[in-house]
Image 1 (cartoon, rainbow over the protein chains, first blue to last red):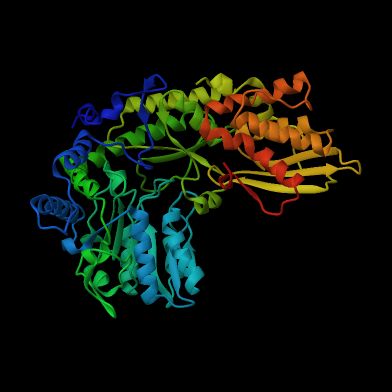
Image 2 (tube, helix red, strand yellow):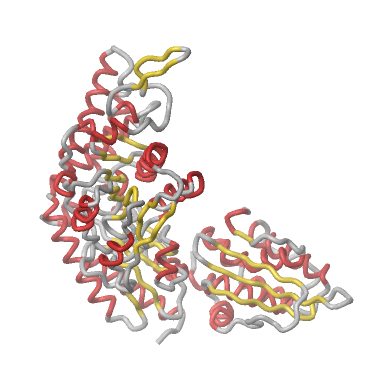
Length: 406
Length: 156
């Protein structure tokens, strides 16, 4: 695989940022889009647009088929058992809210416990916080060590007879920790506790096999997998989707509507109320094809090499501190520079065309745990090269120059 | 965009060694400010004497060079002024950052105007405006004796 060939599929890299070549290191936030995805959106609106699942005319039939083709692709991509286990949502945040709300309605009572971790993104905390507020649930945070690894023994201790669900990330968007999710799911299964995995960061960078993981729920963000915004995926085991109540009510999710009674559509439509982001779902199929054209093994290999290269190079720069040092780390590299606030770092490297993120990355709990008000973050995508890392490091040197830090 | 416009020497210097930093012993007004997007925090301590003059103005907090320098410069400019003049300076600064180029206030001398204008480079960086205004909004809150913490996401 030649990265230059991969990179050339992304039109944005022919643009200049502040007169410089774009070095995009913010893929954990959102990834750039290949031409095939952009073309699909364009083509769908130009030649194929119709709403799906409602009308009998040819355009609608074709649009419906294409929409369902993506569902089949997602099913294969994450190795789900059935297409009925794939629910399209607005984003991964909505996918987690869907589970928290419907599971909470049916299974959470006052005093019940929800176990999450200190690594979680706000989107895997706030939906559960609502259950704490509205139902009197208790949220427990499994602790991490300074390296950013979950302390498995402590995690086990926090599981009690009141633990109703476990929700945790597969890959930290701050420390890059690859969580030993399979081991944790095995622990949970022994106690019959369902597990929701936040797969936002993992889906673009790791091999996902929900059957092998045996997780109950898996949330995915499509725009992070080189796909369009406005689409997320909730994978859930069929028995959950059949037994949990519906989430958003409206058109498309019903079977029969009477003045005194409503019955709901079968899966997956039960959870897909209203007009869906049709063009985006159709275009997301191209993202999956793009991933498959490279092959997940090649993606992992390239990104691992680049992560090691970046870590080695960045650690050599005086006064740079890498946030966390997990046992297994993906291409998410948060860092601080002594004497320079992350926001100042971000502004200065932007001048060199380098796009990174600065702030708490929607992880205030984690930053507080690591005693950091904020951090800067360089995150790697399939299109990044060693040259990108070299330019980043040069830009970091420039920060030190501007701030006169030795 | 020009980095030198944003990170002028005076800003870097104030950012590194902020003036009037730390809680003062005696104060009549205080307020807290927070920029939840970047984690910047500031607390303002204001001591007004009987004649409603700013006898002392100090701050504590952590944040980027822009927010620290801006708050530091603010304390220098406002200290010694009457409450009314202080309010005018704050409004004038916020107006300068968000709207007009010039400082209209007659409360500041030429040197002080030059100092305040050193912060005008931030206008080219819309994402950083909130860094520059956090301390000023917090002082405003202290002067108005508001109880809630200032939150940069709550205003434009």
